Length: 214
Length: 214
DNA sequence: AGTAACTTGCACACCCATGTGCAAGTTACT
DNA sequence: AGTAACTTGCACATGGGTGTGCAAGTTACT
Image (cartoon, rainbow over all chains, first blue to last red; front, side):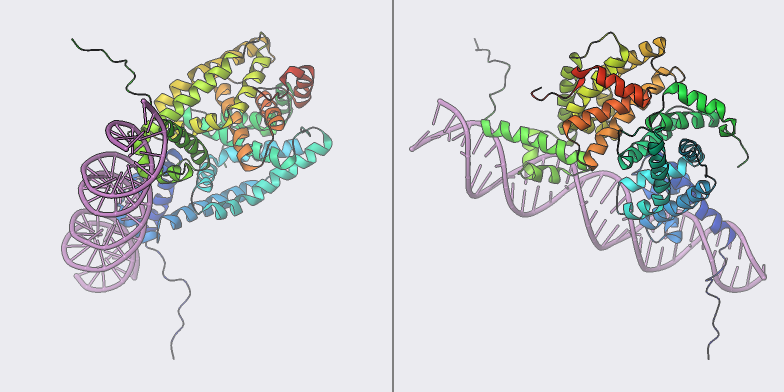
């Protein structure tokens, strides 16, 4: 008769846990700079050897998979905060939350484009996309959002517009307040609002302003 | 005394010229689908062997260089048609011309991002970018274009927005009329016009409508 | 202080893409 | 019909990234 051990294989040693986290963080940084970066580059950024990577992840894909998984969780958490009857406001809130998850979002987008991780990444982004699409549909019904472009197509353009702002933030320096304002302005602009309307909208909703602490 | 031969090395054989053109066309197609496609893939698309590529281009970079060169010429030609006192109209015209050069533009953008060709590609796109930037500055002075975003930053966002439409055209099918309308709407939206203004603008300028036959 | 966990460095095999040399075949041009 | 141009297929070298095995060193935990 054998004793059944707990399914938990073993409580990771502290330095190992740190290194694992460091690798993921390094991957997020390096891959944002160069989507084709080698494991060598990622390990170096984490201050580890390439060989060590294989102590934590079976292979490259598993590392990326983890990255996407973590990103998806952060986005889901951020998205959970968003709820508002006005679809335009909902889009603004989503945009604003995305700004806070800049690096995770961008890595996911970049990984989604290339390689075999695409299906999984798409899965992870599904709720976000559904949420955007829903807001756009509602807004089109109310004609606050341009009804001249099919909702699904407009949703993709909004996604690309948001990504453009995230990329812009890698080129030049954007502090949080500016970045948040910019991504909101760009998303609402894409969706059909004129710039004066956007300014009025932002002014009318001071609760949209950037708050630190979470 | 020696006879001086014309600087033209020799008049390319016809099939060779055809194949060279086929390779460039194949590269445009294949690289639009996958920016990292191998020479093998490009040659195959052209119906040639990988080895033949080296009969026309010294190396991979030279092929890409040629592609960018051709693209730049097409864009320059298209851009030359654009001149209008109203900066918004100017942007619309630029956008409209870009739609006609879809594949060339997209390949250039994709090549510009990665690899050592970036400086050359940037050079090639300079006049286009200058033109966009100029229109934006003029429009901001007149307050028809949103003045709340610095002109250079807005120019980059416009560029990304235009690319987003070109990408959208690779995902779903867009006929010329729709594509042109969409890229104009997106660019003008990014630049701050509301969707009703855009519709009015397009309606007021029937000369913007798609015309075949160049 | 001792043990297991973790990292390192090196060696190696593997894959894939690029670039070159060369002989043999096909094709355009005159 | 003959010649040079062009393409092909193969072999080979090179380079860079991935993934693995193993021995030796370091570090966390008890």
